[in-house]
Length: 282
Image (tube, one colour):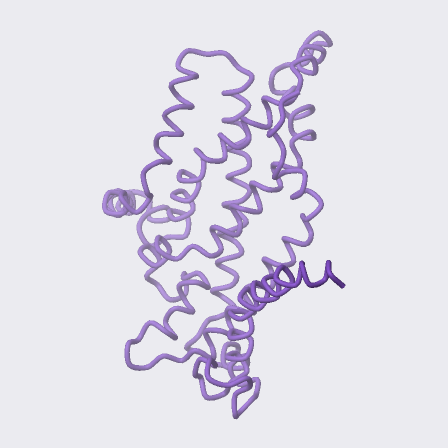
């Protein structure tokens, strides 16, 4: 009984933190079934409940919600795969290969990450506008151009994360493979890739989630309503100062979060090992 009293404040604090964490989720779920379109914050349940907000997203011809979700999934998947391939190749080169400028190159990548990405928005906008004149498929307003920007921005941090893991892989594995006649490319694909599966899954997952939820660059470059991502498309429901419809916005947010939850649960067994990979060298 005395131990219960001594730990009572800890249990109370835990329940307060749990309530604080789940309150935003509760507001989103309740607002999605509120047919009045308001944000449910004043009552436990809204006065009128229904599925009108969900059906609106799929029945209104002026709201290409399924197209937005498809664009987000394609863009996020391509960004995740590209980030893994580029980051892994760069990390392997910086960790295992010896070439002139190796140390300066990895330090430069780290230095670039110090500056916020929005500082380069104006320059990127002008560059993509010029690229559009030559290659419209990768210029301003295109999904391909936005993908290139995402891949370029993620290479530095991914290379550093993966390099820490590769440094923890014993060099004896590489030397044994080379003695057996393996080339650097065979060492990369047959030894590094299987061993790095957990951390590669984490990099891919973080890249997928970050790209799927990214709003600033997507809203700047994707001006056509059919090419928008789900984050940019849903913003039109709450972006108007005098007419904010939170119902479809919250309903779309819940539907869009389903792929993220499925992917997270599918890769959960890799995430635990991947987050701690490279923390101890040996």
